[in-house]
Length: 214
Image (cartoon, rainbow, N blue to C red):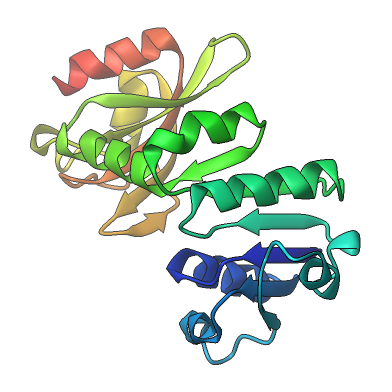
């Protein structure tokens, strides 16, 4: 896949490198040559310095043949314009834009962009983690018959097994994150207080889990 990443700050550099490691052809555009120092030394994609809104620059980046574009600068207005140009002028099928200031998120979504807001998402996730053992819905399937949720294991459940947690729902335990490291769970795996558990369950199952976890 041919991907253009607009902006080479911390987010752009990380995204570009991940895409490169995954085997994609990556071109990174930034107004400052200094920004490319954020890229790891073994990055072998293309880097272009210049005005990202310049038609000539976009042609140099190969936008006519791009399969995807991500605009991840710290300017919401620039990200919005880049997403709009990519979708309406160049018909790029896969577009994602970064939301830097949460107050601009609604406007970016109005344009129909796929929006990633690190500030909003980060604040939400920290709120959930600080709330302790509550179950937090993430995604609903169908008409809400099944929900994918996560929960933080409370101290009262430390030492109990994945199988016991699944039976309390009932629920399907998909993954566990412990100290930042994701793991595939086994039925006899012992839970630890603070584990982040990703589960699939029904609304009734979620209510049952909330009661069991206190």
